[in-house]
Length: 224
Image (cartoon, rainbow, N blue to C red; front, side, top):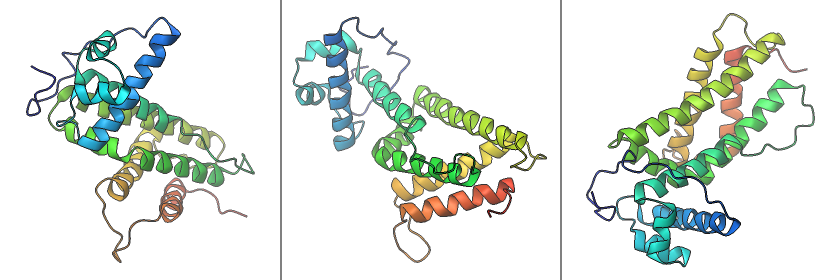
């Protein structure tokens, strides 16, 4: 399959992962290619993106691309990995009371939703490609499972502190609540779903509503 074939079905299986560059210059060049690829993918979409456009955006020769990546599928996977890392570790606003579970949850939801909004175009592309390629579908599933596992650990910790309902399974609860948040984020920032009154979703409104739903579902104690 040609990486430049716009009508071909993408396949990561044909793109084995390479080791990271051993030199600082190599690391910079690879990072420049990944950054350029993100620009091109977000601008042109996955199928219409061409390697020549990526190398032009990065300011390097086409041959340089093949030093670091096998094909378009592999560099797209690298772009998605960067977005996944950004969303897993988006950086939270400072919480005045770190012992207040509601405040921590609110800050966590705000950080996630802000990161999702920042990566919305890529999230849309990932969904499109995952529908036709099993390797990217597996990437999407692994990404979701990582969030579920992390949130399940958080719920279990809240149960130990007698903050969350002790009778619910933390993994099942995390799967349900994490799915709610990610589905709302996709609707608000990717597919452009509108609120019932036709308005675009406001970030702070989403943060407030989703945090309240999480807290109510886990039976947080009333805030004093």
